[in-house]
Length: 175
Length: 157
Image (tube, rainbow over all chains, first blue to last red; front, side, top):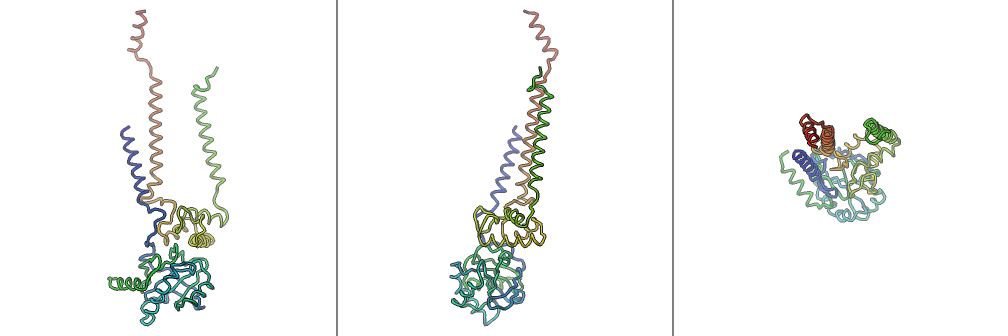
């Protein structure tokens, strides 16, 4: 009887250990299976009607930003993204691409006309690019190295200074 | 007259009939359930095993959030391309962190599948041991010493 009790106690302890080591269902983190891996392709047509291919941006840092015009934090981060783009437009060392998330191209066009911003904005009508990047809710941004590797997933609104700090951090780090 | 409850042959057949009914019921349920037939059905079945990344306690199949809709679209495209449920789950898990509602069959999470089976086997072994002990206790025969004691007691009367 003692052996059975001990075995049952071990089994229950193992079950508790398995369940306790799993993340709670509501917990959200900046973790992503994409970190350290090549950035998924983004190929599409921008709001300006031009073709876009993320692969063409090799050699530059790229911020892939997922947003929607109905999302308040996205609207709030917009001036920061505009500042980031303006800061790097001259040097050409970094750039920005926005991908629509559950939003129509017409709504996004109206938003950019009103709020400014001249970086590429790619429509993603069925959400395929969002799924490729594992986007749960917007705004979400991914920092892609000049060699095309995803190094950061930024959940929530970002600032130009925050992105620049990250770029400086990775540029200072050995490859 | 036959004692239906205590007759060992009747009891044995009773157990056989019960086992047969269980096997037939399980087999019928499995066959009737069958694999999903339409694309929509497959998307629902696969979506039910994936956690909606923006919800609490909802699967991709049961949520109307933008992320869940996008994942359902992705599942639909992959089903139409002929990918299996496991392949699709792996693909979605490759981009979304901790999205699987069903624990993995391998690694540490695999214990969730193995331990209940282990406990069941242990419990069945315990029941079998108990029954064997009980049966050996009920079929115990009188020894010569027991008979001598009985004779001695009867002779004294």
